[in-house]
Length: 456
Image (cartoon, rainbow, N blue to C red; front, side, top):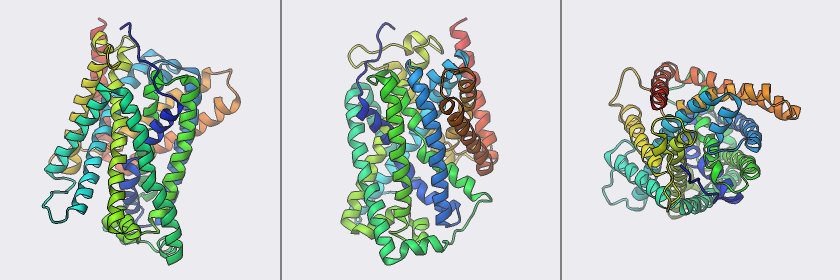
């Protein structure tokens, strides 16, 4: 327990962590979902992206100020502990380690596999490749991607940081190209104007399309908080982490909104709903270049998996470093050669496997039906907004030395945005929220019991 994580990441790498973790699969496959949820209404979809971006930015700014004051081993856990108390800090740490990080990582492994198979099927149309998102090939490739990301982070965390930087740059290429070329092309041929004036035809609609769409943007925008998990490994983190969050957040919001509009210039709303956003790439750039861009999409998704895996590997360590949770001496141990919490990383990997099994059975193959079926890609994200509320309240109550804007205005806006996300989740997911909250309560109870037993 004497060893500590080294400060090995600079500002540029930290910005790439924020941008690279957030920008990935969400913007590619949620764009299609959002258009479906809004009944093919493109302007309403843009409104959802804007609202989701505003909520992200006010939360991000508020927590960036906390990052300037509180610093330990894991940003959001540090903030929870410093503002609300050690017990709440443990609750937050247990939630992100057992539900939030691994559930998101499992979904992203599948999404990366899905886009990789789409690329392979496009360049090898004569080969019989099962590219079905629910097929066994997609599941097995998800496991391979998971294993590779795990080994990269455990054996060479510095290389994982460089990989994150590289994939961040790569993933911006298709997004920026689509935003610029799509908007220009769409304005010239009238497709963009037509899409904003004419709704597509959808088979099913939701009773609260805007709320449902904003919930989906939450998945695409979420991830900036994960970058705070490397707080103890960022050089001069009190200055660089807040800078990385703010700069990264501005880049993310601008790219997402412009990309969504650009996609509307490359294909009709109906095509986007039925075939997905990759159709716009093929329409604009042709088959060959379109396939190259699909490869870039797959690589960008893998970059997101890498960033999420980075957080998963440190999840249990953030608890153990405080002397809390099960086996703190074991889970808090740092490997002398790799400077990684190896035991914590292994537990994180097992949790990802568990959540991937649930996601595949309940959400994809739909073998698991009936009670306790919920969307494991979105609901854990909504829970984090609920857990932000006590932190924001206590920050406003305790931090008397902060300027009014930092102490009240931004936290109040972040509080309202978080409450809105929770309400939108209830309207959008209905009974699924109840099943998820029951699972959340059981996992939390197990965590509290294990913590009590280890310190009995």
